[in-house]
Length: 185
Image (tube, rainbow, N blue to C red; front, side, top):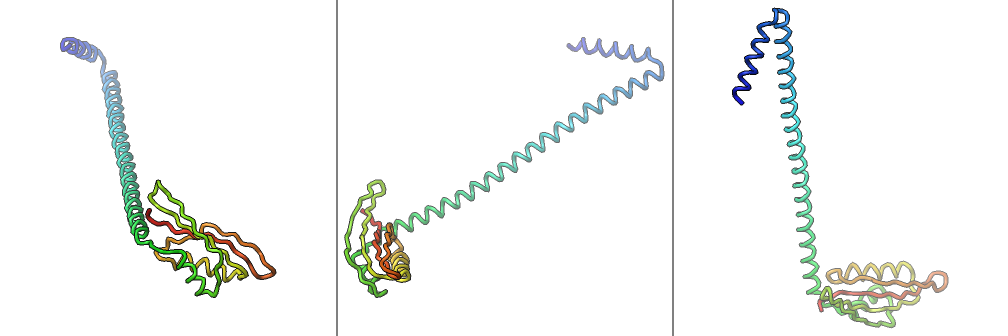
C-alpha cells in the first residue's frame, strides 16, 4: 500500500514538472479549490452535527420540563386522593338526621324519606342514598335546599345524585331528590 502511494506521488511530481509555468499555476489553483471545497464540506458536517445535538438537547429539556410538570400534577392528585380518603374515613354522617336539619333551617318539610345502601366492592365503599320528596316549594327554596345540602355537608361528601321536578300550579313545584354520601365499607 505504501509503495502504491509512493509511486502515485512520483508520477504526480513528474507530471507536474512537465507542465509549463501557466499550467502549474492553474494546477495549484485547482488543488487549492478542491482542498477548499473539502474543508468547507467538513465545516458544514461539523456545524450540522452540532446543530442536531443542540436540537436534541432542546427536545430533552422540553421533555424533562414536561416530566416535572406531570410529576407535580401526580403529587397534587395523590394529595387530593389522601385528603378524600381521610374525609371518607371521617364521614360518619346520617342522612336521616342531616337532611331534616337542613330542611328545617330553610322552613321546608321533608316527606317520604327512603334509604338505600349500595356496596361498591371495587372501591371498598358503600353508597348510602336517601330519596326525599319536597312538596309545594318555590324555585328559590329548592335551589337553596340543594346548595345547603351539597355545600354545608360535612367534608362535602354529600351530593345530589338525582333530581326530578314537577310543576304544581303557577309558582309551586314538587321535587323528588336522591341525595347520597359515600362511606368506607
